[in-house]
Length: 80
Image (cartoon, rainbow, N blue to C red; front, side, top):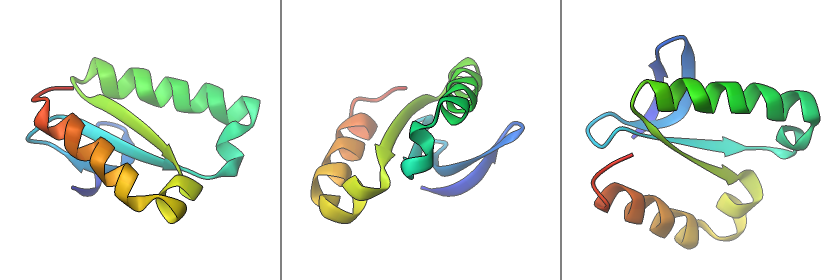
């Protein structure tokens, strides 16, 4: 998994084999206009056959084990 282009967007992390996108969001993603843009991106990824996981930056910094466990569970589930 790593940053890759999926159609017209660049996703933070992508596993093409399992069709999963992981987006790591900072605080500005809580702003209304950014939420709308993120929703548009999510719908695009999903329409392209990808499942999307969104995590907050602070989750990654404060609970990396939990974030990695969530990602692993998604990857092991076998689908988006």
